[in-house]
Structure formats: C-alpha cells, structure tokens
Picture 1 (cartoon, helix red, strand yellow):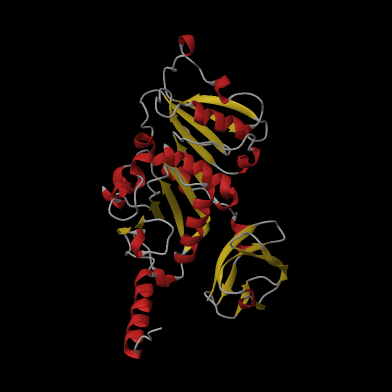
Picture 2 (cartoon, rainbow, N blue to C red; picture 1 turned 180 degrees about the horizontal axis):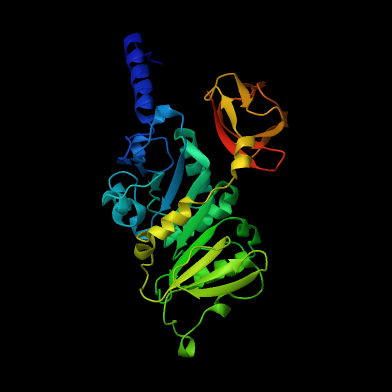
Length: 375
C-alpha cells in the first residue's frame, strides 16, 4: 500500500480540521440579521435560516427565546440551492420585510422527499439548536403552516415538555387519539372554515383528541343555515378544569390552555392573517414553561458555573435552604437527583461531554431549567 508523504498528510489533516472549524460557526450571523445556513456548511440535520434578535450578544451569557418555524410542503428542498424557498411565507417572510422578533427564529427546510418534520426530526433539530445557541429552555415555541402545521403537531408528539406554546395553522397532520396530556401545553390552533386543501376536520379532530371529552369542539360553533359557515370569525375555548368548550365571536387567545380560531373567509391560506396579527405574537411570547411570581423567582435565583465546563460545576444559590437538583441527558435519562445547598460541587464531566439539562425544584414546587455544556 502506497504511503502518503508526511507533507501531504499534514495538508490533509489541516484541511480536514479547517473544514470542521468552518462548519462549526453557529451562530452564523449577527444581531438583527437573517442568515441562510446551507446544509453543506453546517452539522445541523437541515439547512435553515437563522434570525438573531437585535439585542443578541453571544458573549453576554444571556439566553433567548426560540421560535421554530415549519414551512409548507411547497417550500421543501435540498437545504442548499433552493433554501430560499423557506422565505415564501410566515416568520421568514416577515423578517425579510423588516419585522424584528424578540427571539431567535430558526426556519429549517425539510427534504424534497418529505413534506413534514417527523417527531424524530424535531428532536434532532431541537438538540442541534440547544447545543449551538444560547436558548432559554423555558421559552421554546413551535409554529407552522399546512404541512408545517402537521410538523408542529409532530413536535408536540415528540416531547411536549420541551415546548412552551404551539401555534399550528391549517395543520396537515394529527395527534394520537386520545392526547389528553397535551392539555398541559398552551396551544392556539387556526384554520379557515372553507379550506379545500387541508380540511378544517384535521384541526377539529386534533382539538377533540386533546380535549378527550367525547364531545366535539364544533358543538359550540354557531353554524349558519344548513351547516354553513358562521357570520363571523369564531374562537372556541377549552376549559381544562370543567372540561367544557365555549365559543365567542372574534380571534381570541386561549383563556386557559387551548383555543381554536375558525376563520370565516379564505381558502387554504390561514397563515397570513394569523402571522400578521400582533395579538398572536404577544400571546406566544407571554408563554413560559415556568411562570414564576416575584416571591418564587427569588427562591429560585440559582446559578450554575462554570458553564460550559470540562470538569466540575458549582451550584450557587441566594438561599440557605436546600433545593432539589435533577440533571438529565438529551435523551431524557436522569443522571443526578439530590438535594443541594449553596456552593455545592458536582462532577458532571464524569458522565461524558455533551449537553445536559439541569432542573432546579424549590420547596414551593417552582421549577427552572438550565442547559449545561460539558466539553
């Protein structure tokens, strides 16, 4: 076998390492920028567009809310030469037209042979994002239109505990029957009554499977004569305590956890009016996995450092009381579970490099989550 001269092997190694460094650059853009990240230039499972909020500062130690947008079937592609198809609708279009968001927005492109992101596709993408961006794990939002609405439902199926809120729009896809556990996640679904591409029945079925009462959400919808569309937009609200649906005229955010807005006018495109509605975004960004009162927030003022780490981490609290610490790996295995006090040292590097999720639980039952990076 012919050996490679030392000079050539050194060049090969240099090029290999250089190519890896070139690809490992997330975040790719700067604050306020919308950047195309092609599949050939990233280790991400998909090519995507990256938007960074105007106050983004990688060196600040701050974390940022995440909006994960799923496009429709017509925007699928190879993640490279036709990645710009993702800009056609939804948040990417709004960003291109000058809208700023108080969040990191990732708009990934699904492959040509698939119109949707499967539950496992969501998990792979989610794990890449939290490993490469400073994400507030309490404020991860998913939304999408048509096939992307189906991807939104799939994300909830994959792991609803990671998602602070979801906005599926005319979603082509469903959740399991029943899916009562999704009553814990804020969901605001949207559909046009006369959608001839993805019938409203898709969203109706999902609402019914989540409510799991044996009654249909449409029993409270004020149909017109002969089962026709009502005389206005209507929103159906589900009360998770009484397990009763109600309806009201207008486009109304969930008063509890779940609502379904059925628009009077329009064909398949229910997304333009939804994404152009500032009330929708205001509701979305108000949601969090852990909404704490001021008193609760004081009790959970916990810091974990150094982070990233290659050895031990130290738990720093502002209280002398014990708090419970749970640490999970990215597949959900619990690797640590005990009560901790101020300045406690934990050897996390012994579990190997990677991303870990630390959950702090106070005596009041309040919770907060942190991402730990072990190098």
